[in-house]
Image 1 (cartoon, each protein chain N blue to C red):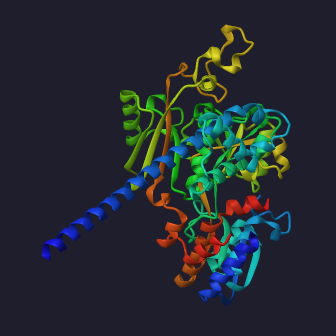
Image 2: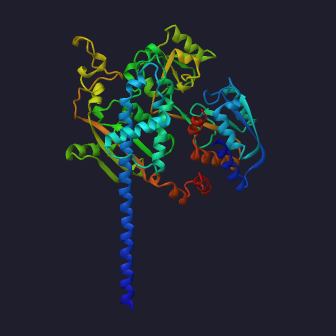
Image 3: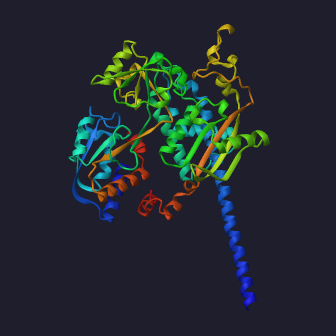
Length: 240
Length: 280
């Protein structure tokens, strides 16, 4: 199917004469399990999906991996044209109109303290919950009466895990807990996470602010068509 | 001559209006059948999720029947057993998308389902419905499914009823209808077909919504130790078998009811894509 998707884009773009003899530079941020820097990036599903679409449009597609902070600097200065995957609710950047995927925030617990259904908000009252500095938590969660403890170390996930282990935290808040709680992550052996269903946010491809409107439209249309034909979710599951 | 011409025009107009109106009626009736089937497919999946609670929550074992095609086959079997009729033919884009979304929801819960250290995973009919509806919205399919009830009886405020749903529930309570279908409704100001089917409490609902006596967490405990908090963390409602337990509300935007061919004709998706994928 990946081949078919690629052929489709090549054909449709060739027919409309918009394959450009140009290079496009794409920044990539770690976002496991969709983009995993611990393995060759070309094996990451989100990379493969984006690559399939862009190589039908440009003669050369250059991917470069960055930390999120550095990637935003590169995007702002225009040294990269695109950046993904990015939660745009946290960053005010120009982005494509359709999200590549969605994430849902949640809480991670020690397994013995696991709360599976977070709509039972009353169960969260008085819990000590770690929140990484700069992360906006859901207003509904804020109102539960949980004690929010701001995590400020460089690696807030490591800090949260340590505090959870020592019982100084009952849980930690994560904008996409499934990035932590998945079968590929050894952490999942002793933590379990549940989600605040009903509060999804989109993960997008961001574009540099000074991208020409014509270029933006071309890329935006290509991704919109691709997502209509085969969503990234479907692509991810097929390749898994 | 003029008289004859007028008669012919009149006859033609009558025939035309007959065909137009019968076409509209046929589309409405088609929509009604379709939305009922969507609702039934959902109810079958919900029933299956309940029936599979021990498998979902058990430690170890073969859980492959909860995923992929095996899961869909189980939904089909549950549908045929519950409604005593054949599972609808999957000749509509929305049917296949709905089934695909169900597979996706189960896949999203794979780590949870295989987590042997959690005795209760929280994947119950209500949370499955919620995740499914979320998935359908994300896929932009124009189908919304939700469990709802009167505000005083609702557990998750995200499932609060809108005005249409309140009217449907009141109408059901007064007229004892089996379902409520509306082909002239809207949701978010978009024309939609809406369907509400009331749900009477069945035995399996009472584990959470019944009395403390029916709470599985109290099994083996002295009555003085019984809790009226169910396994999900909510206070039990003390409802009884056959009570009104809210209902299932299904909305399909009219534009999304159109089939792929019509979407192609109307240029919702590119002509090239239509032809290319028609070859598949």
